Length: 308
Image (cartoon, rainbow, N blue to C red; front, side, top):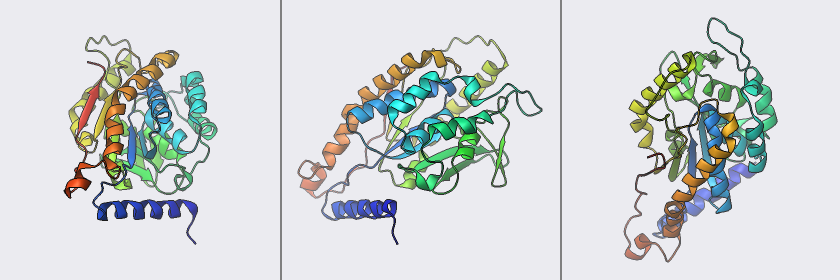
């Protein structure tokens, strides 16, 4: 027996196939990749709010580190106002405890209870929107992508296991740490999941002037430099990259929720004309490809930086 989700999948696949045979570009299937940034991950709430207000439907979601928390909450069916309310009240103590050990300065055991409150469902197969969560495999140095089936809570904790701050998570025979180590914006998995158009949200590094105040700020800045060197890898999978201006927000800047959400909204509004054009080009009678008989053209790679 085919369940409701499988039925929707086949209906969507048949519709896209019919559009291709009729010479029309298929209706865009938007995939949204949410990058990490700890407290700065609240920025993603602003992006999602603008998309909702303008009828931009997200078909696939992926997240890494803090982005995996927001992505999972939204994918599970938690209403955006509820996610925003939780994000505004969230503090470090809600997801972690300062308990120094041989492997880390804190532990993330509390994060499980936090996620249980945030998510409406806890397994990948029950998500309202297909979800991928990315962590990093310490043994192989590769990304570990979790999606499709099974518990989502432990993979999210693994994706948030920032080296030095939180201990690695052992799962499926792997030793896992923060997904940002190997992929700071999880755009590539969305292509595998079926997205025709991928929007990536990248949370930029702090302003160039950097004066380390503690060990964690040194570690954080070091990882930011590393990810800047490897970002070309995930950018190849993104059609549109949004970079909200959150440079002056600290990793622990939970008190700046208003500014972070506003930055996300500003970035999303700047992208609306591009996204709306994708849909306009896919409508019968409006597509150049449909009129000319030419093959549909993939969307151009576009980057919108609001932190310049």
